[in-house]
Image (cartoon, rainbow, N blue to C red):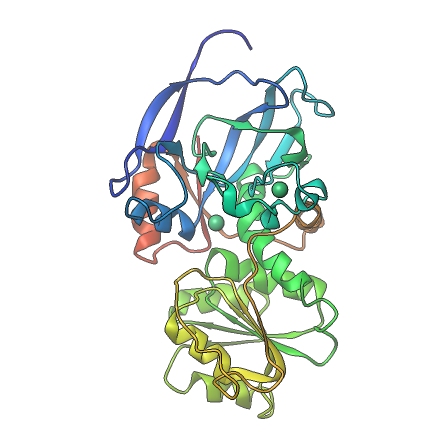
Length: 351
Ligand SMILES: [Zn+2]
Ligand SMILES: [Zn+2]
């Protein structure tokens, strides 16, 4: 553990420029820190938002290593890092908070009370992330053991699995027998949303996308009905519910068009859950585009206890991430394909 080595990392070095592969010294964990040898790191649409951001748009400072969906094994621990063994294979809970507030104390770092004061949102989002040979994790509490689960499955589950799980868990009392939900956007998160809905709710699942192959993936993931986005999609979806509208919409795009579609498709008293970060706008007024009794939520990532549940679902065989694998040196190609909408499921880097 003491030999000086190099670690290759995909780093954002200046705003408005593409990320670069850089050789760094392998970090030595201090205090409660834990050093992970990365086995897999997922690429997320939000990585594109970060890469494309102009200076001053994100609450982060460059340089930092990208990558917020990470799995690997522990190779070194700081002197104050307790409760974790060298060699343990882990998924990394990515939305690192302040570590001191009540939310962080119960593993709800995604809603850290000091979130607005932090210069990061988590691993790879203002702090060095896992698109690298190594990742330094601030504390063992961010690590969830994965046993022998494939790292290329475990890594995307930490966001592409956790984020929809958190959103679905938020409606757990509502999604009873006889309910119908719509999933808009069947990419990395959306195809796992369909599988999680299948696994933990009795709801019928309708899936919507602009791409035929995404609908095929939705079908393989267990959707009851799939439909291409067209001008009459809200009528198609309403017709599938006998005209009442769906009980919940999970919007994994979040554009003007999908927000409007969700609002038009929702049943009275339904839930519009916006997960996609396309910065679309929807007017909130009463009366307005949303039906009476509608609830709107903007969930962000998920909690650490929920990540344990997601990993358990995968270990039980209820979740299967559709992945395309790339070497770390091919990250540029993977990002180009993601940008062009040509990744099926999740792109995952394998250092
Ligand atoms: Zn993400
Ligand atoms: Zn906190």
